[in-house]
Image (cartoon, rainbow, N blue to C red):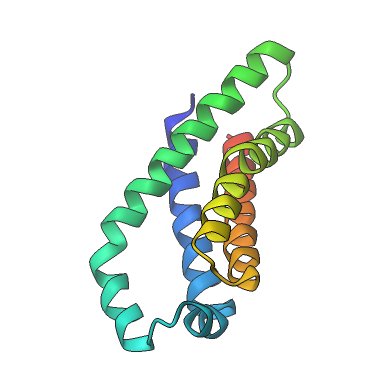
Length: 132
């Protein structure tokens, strides 16, 4: 694995989270979760280390999966990395989120916002990893 690629993918994941939940979907997310802007800001400061760790683990997992796929296929293509990212999102992320949100009776729109974020996260990280 390329550890510089993993580090850049982790940073890219942080950027995706910041844009997604800080700019694009912050208001609908607040409305759907019932979290106030004040609560969200307090939690954001408190949970940045947790987000960084989670993104690092995701980047390492994707990096390993991409490397295994590159070795198995004999090719090093950004598109192969993107397929791995999509497959990981589909197999592990969205399926888990849909199950949990359904049983927790969360609004379907919230599931869509969070699942789309995870897709953007996985594809961005896979793209970065594939470029390294």
